[in-house]
Image (cartoon, rainbow, N blue to C red; front, side, top):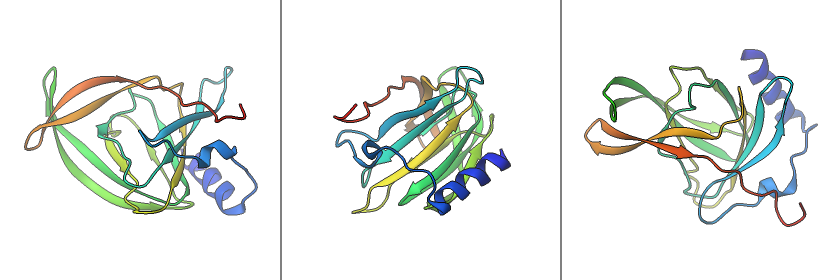
Length: 167
């Protein structure tokens, strides 16, 4: 994980890697997910996410997969959550740390410490992040507020957005 985080940070700072233009186009309805690469041999996938101002996620997991996330452009607020207890559908989380991740920063999520939110708190600037997942991430659990520290778990199917009009 450390080597992958370092490689992503170096690629961002060096400017040697260019992302497709569509990655820099937001979607008004939701943050955009665009697959950049998937290795059929090794299983991992690389997804770019485009965050318009104010867009973010609820508390979610990564379906038990590791992930390395790097901010390519802009800044994202990331809040980690600690799972304290749960039953079949009710989960109790407490915040376990928050950071504002700026361009060129990277972090990793390793189950079971994978619960977090991401938000572009900027009022004006688009943010872009690149996520390297252990495998293709087609679903996850999201946690919707219920009462206090308690949340309801729901399964969410994740879709990819198209690569823009040129593709």
